[in-house]
Image 1 (cartoon, rainbow, N blue to C red):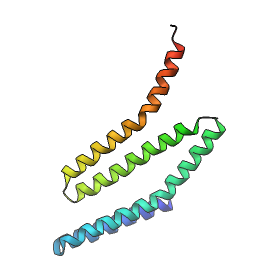
Image 2: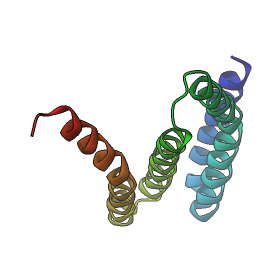
Image 3: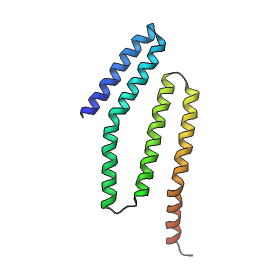
Image 4: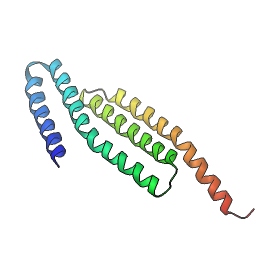
Length: 130
């Protein structure tokens, strides 16, 4: 809860400073957005690390293959970082770059998903009578 308050506070402070700077020094507003975004990401990482630790502990108790959990975490991380970069690009008015980052992130997620799809198909084929 405390991290959420910090994140919201940083967001509002960044917003106010950005609005003020856009009137006088538009170039500096971009730097404020970047710094505020990085601070928000930093405070979010603590929560994310707790979730990762919980998932690893849960997978070891349930005897689930850790490779699937790590793959899931990689895909989630790529999605989060892609969305973070896309948002910053859109804030800067560069929607064309944002769409390219979006496409690249989706391609990477699909390529990482192939082992899971292959494993699922193998298990499905094993259940079907030949």
